[in-house]
Amino acid sequence: MDMPIIGVGTFGSDHISNREMAQAVKLALEIGYRNIDCASVYGNEREIGEVLATSGIPRDQLWITSKVWNDSHAYQKVIASAKQSLKDLQLEYLDLYLVHWPFPNFHPPMCDVTSRSPDARPYIHEQFMETWSAMEALVKEGLVRHIGTSNMSKAKLELLLASASIRPFANEMELHPLFGQYGLLSYVQEQGIRAIGYSPLGSPNRPERDTTSEDKVDMDHPVVKELASKHNCHPAAICLKWAQGNGIVPIPQSTKERNLRSNFQSVMEDPLSSEELALLRTIDCNNRLIKGQVFLWEGAESYHDLWDEDGIIPIPERYRKGGVR
Image (cartoon, rainbow, N blue to C red):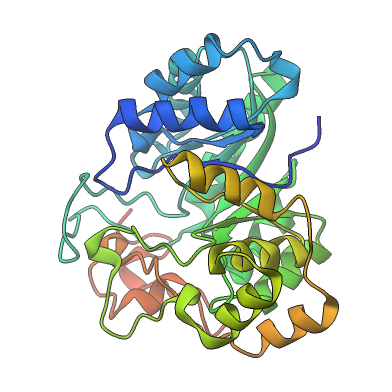
């Protein structure tokens, strides 16, 4: 089975209960969604597993993704985390298993933006490859069909592609019209890696820790609203049509049946023209919303250090080979 062109995100943004999210998945499956994006850290895989087990939908018609969290980057912990997700989701295999973030940096749920782990580390390739070797072992064991990454930069992906025995099938990344990441997106697609777009609507319900005064709202942008009027749809639909037009699999999250239906319909009909996509490209303003400040390590200056924006992975001397591990 190929990955469906739209999925449902299941991150509760610290305010949606497990049962409510599971009910949203149930609604989504009834509407026609077959792509469900899960993660161990979301804490709701057991409830979602109950929905999957009673849906009546044949397993080979579902695409289920899960992710290993930052506190499980060691080889055996990756294996154990995947097996726990399989147990909770009541599945024999996952279609896609992702490394959620490329850092072994833990933070507690519902923490604020100032939270920092004393054990936080920058990206260290040798350590990441231990995690990746476990991901590859999961494929060889038949527990997952495909493996991939999330929140990776081009610099990190270049290292992984040079070292991996099994290449990443997909990279999940923040993507919406005001944050198109066009350079990284092009690189990912040129490498034959699928682009999965999280926060495709501009993440209006993201946690407070990821909200800053300079953030902009995609659905309020005049060009997005103009195109929504032209296509007689909600601005959210334009964001999803933008994703589809750029070869991105969006995974919007909603618990409302009306929105779930509208999101699904958005990518099934009335696509944007090449001219409209080109127009939307002009409004990109590097509006990163999920900044990741809580993953910063000692000595990091700001969230910009997480994303290798100058093409260089910052590794302080104390973390280099022979230093603190």
